[in-house]
Image 1 (cartoon, each protein chain N blue to C red):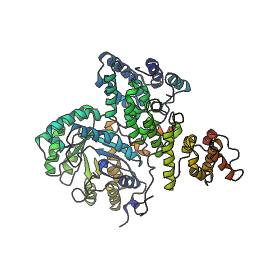
Image 2: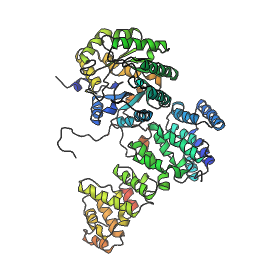
Image 3: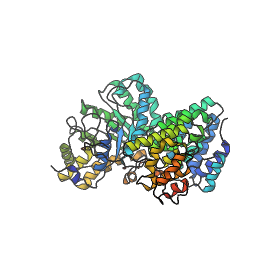
Length: 311
Length: 294
């Protein structure tokens, strides 16, 4: 099979859900090479439970600081969503403290929404903090990025949407993520954004994604990689684009589901614009004028991973 | 000492730049919040406005005149920021507004901003180190900024900033200079880069040069200028390498060192150089400028 890159030469992509904190610079370089111009990193758990609010604060700081800078070194614009994830919402005392931290971070530069929030096991505590964060999002006028549970997904997705509507959120401000064949129809019918995570073995595959787009069109559909510390692929978005083109989906449709819609959904935050993504990231605008020798975006030295020599 | 400069005058000078051609809506928002800050003295208002400034005022690159900048450096020597966007100028002005009567409360207030700062806020806060009251209280914070891994944040501390040379002790200063060489910073934009040279720094930089040579990597040119006053005859090996280097810039540096050295052995080395190789060398400044050494 041909390398996917030949199908997507010159195309630009946006991955609205990827956990770069758990990925290496090799991934950043590969993403940049494949045409990923921007991404959104949702706040999530770290694989093992946090034990205090300072851990959350430092993590949020890294999302609006260090990780943003790290991405810019590869010419990629990094945005994030901030929130208390569903898993850690089950630690009540900690959750209360995190809720106090959130207002401080949700208005930082590059924060395009509240996320990724929702249900994991669908416990009462998860529900409580999901509702409170929906209120926060509504008051702040921010889009919401919803993590739908991997177990009992259909039921969990329906409940998530019901509650969002109950709290007065406009469906066009809500991105329901990790959809599959069982959830897509309801999500689209109710006017929500439907995001699909292309992730090997456990979530959506891109051949199935092709079928979904052929069946439902592109309206309010977007794809992401949700690449994290597990076996996942940060190139899922460009690869899915390549497969779609191979299978006869129009370039315009492909552009919508792998670039346009992902950006459009988060525009209401005022922290992202299409024009941002036209030029590669350079974190500090004034750098262009200072003539400093700081590495600009996309100017990392490139290593050859196949080379035995490391110099 | 509370402020190292006339704070109201500095505030006015920054205001002139930050508020020029600012839309009236944003100006009113800032003025009314300043009024409230003065009346209530609430930390949360101070933090919230600081955070919100980019959204309200935008990130237009401002172009202060020489006169504007002179007004700043007249208040505080070396403070002439360039390449700042509107939000940073306004934030700098805002940072001069809180009540500074209690050292403990003031320092805690400013420190709190650092703890939850995003990228743009970090760059702003570090570049505004010269503006804080009780400047001695921010030495650790300055050193922390230099330890930061984000290149633009380190630049904000090191470049065009009078704070480090004014307040870092020698050990911290030396660490900063070595890191600057290590990470390829434009050294001549570090204020005090020349004035604060010292023997220990020269030793560290000379060791660094030897390390680079052993690794087959280039040595930053300016490093030779910085260490030459401290070189003794024992360093003949390094200087020979310069004098006979295929790199003309290094060769010229070697000539300058030997010609200006007080050590007879080094001056004698010049005799070993082919006639004409070291001819017409003016001085270090012309060497730096001619080769655009930063």
